[in-house]
Length: 100
Image (cartoon, rainbow, N blue to C red; front, side, top):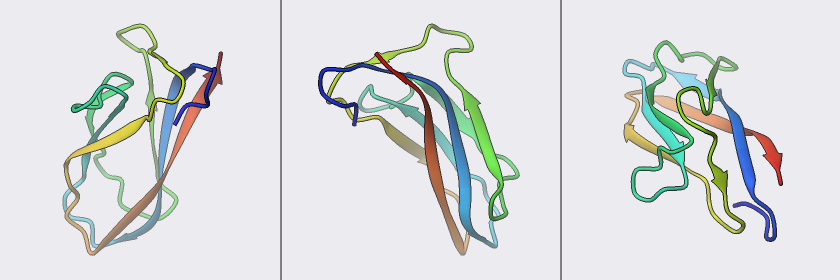
């Protein structure tokens, strides 16, 4: 959630696997603040070949559109439209950008 009295500009998202076991289908995700699709920061993307601990998938925001200024007190969410098929798959999501 964006701190009160500020706006967030997300320029990059990094998803790093923290646990991985027998991943046979990669997940499809998007990131945003626009319910219910959550795709106005990072559009729908399949994380192909992300299948080992410490591997990362990096997304750059705003490649084809202007960066979204996320309003104060707004939650930024990740939508998983296609879940991974795996015995175990957990990740840490890093939002990189700045507050204005």
